[in-house]
Length: 183
Image (cartoon, rainbow, N blue to C red; front, side, top):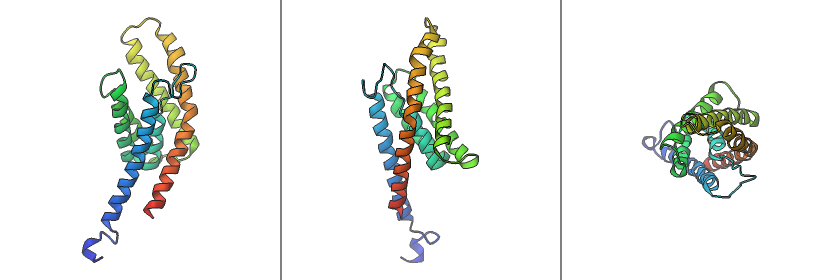
């Protein structure tokens, strides 16, 4: 290649292909998590289902930074809003912010490891549970809102926290595979 077709000694076409492969790999992970999360009886134990998209957005944010985490959060939130019975954009905006914040925290303050992923996932779950429960049960004035929190939201959050290391390891595997592909 001549100097005109390279950018600072790098081939721009190869860089674009690497980003395309990375986005496609993370997109397939998000699609798989969405399909499992939205399936009626998939992964359900004692009435609790894990929220697979939330820890996956946290993990992608840890590996890609704030821009990739925000993009993954927006896509995951859009997918979640497709089947959720909430206001459109409810999960999209929330997961976008979570992905950006997790990416920024890893870039500026924290290291990317399993403990960090679990802590950030636990924090995001607390925020999501309080956000969803507060807007669904408290503001609308349902009967026995604390029973719904105790018997519905908390088991789901605990189950999600137990599943989150698996999603972190899957994201780590995909990240390493894509980096090996990039060369």
